[in-house]
Length: 439
Ligand SMILES: Cc1ncc(COP(=O)(O)O)c(C=O)c1O
Image 1 (tube, protein in one colour):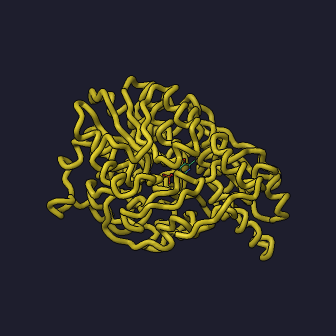
Image 2: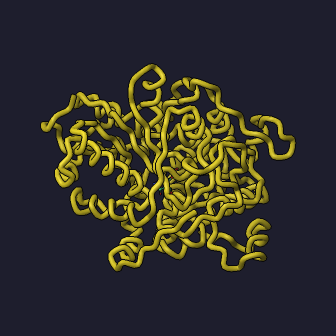
Image 3: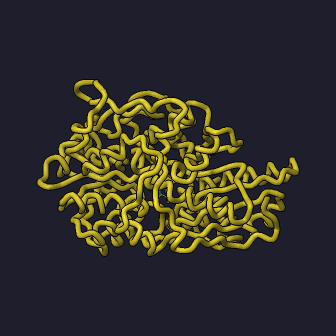
């Protein structure tokens, strides 16, 4: 059991960087429902996925191997910013006057400022290893696009990014970051794809959505030469790459004789939360008592109000059908500042575990998550991404419940990104202009 003597930060050395990712598919209590081909309605085969992804990532998507070795060139790039520190939030605890012990894994220290490079670097590497010259992708808030731009620059691949239009307007400097790392960026919907043109014909002012940007990126991929597509969340291999976060966190907590009672993360497509939580879920399957809480916006409440059913991953209905919690692939979420949480679906692996009762989900409106982000900035110092603020809000609420009950729980959340390019949201909050949206 940890104590008031814990260090502020628990650091791992480069040598302690994990050598393999954890693949939860090896340990699932029930098998994951397969993706379904949109035309045949049969389970997808590897051949169905190969036009979009390199062979190695398709293999990882369906692999049942418990640990998948991280290639040396990927580990080399990881070492630019990993292992990331685990912090104890002493000042937040003091502010809340709580007996809870609050820990956070700081993924905001990557060059792009979030957890997204953990998979971007791996995906760029596997594409390069198979001779791919061009990649297309979508991005919401720009965190994924900038992470992949960095990965593609480091491995020498050209990148085209379809950025959700509302975020393109709210976060112009994310676009600049992508361009600094050599990517070409479009505000989605564009008139360069069939999917984009169809939406613009109905609504010329459409703010865009991740589902629509995916349609555009997939269409651009399949209509271009030597081009693959990359997705920044949702898919099994993406969640697996993110388990580096949970594997490190577990080792760091062990060093101070700690184990979390609750693991918390915000959920857009589900990758950062899966990455932190899956290594702990392995213990839960074996009988360990650990709670896992996914936190999402009330304006895009996939896990808390969506249906668990097969749906398309994109707006135009061109991707395989995935069994997941979904609000329907035509859903266009309100323009909240947590752009990375505006996705109609969720990772099938995460959805399965929520449906089976291994994980729970809660939702908050954006004014409440900014209250939490402000408290965090004014105690711990870090200005966090609005996405991350969702799990900070839950952590604060749980710590306050501990104050009431006197329980000294150990709470661990994933600080998935900094908010230094999200200051518009903070500006509106401070000016009292921030509005809440319902679904
Ligand atoms: C900082 C940050 N956190 C969380 C997310 C949500 O994505 P995911 O659920 O895949 O982790 C995003 C997405 O862009 C993000 O930028």
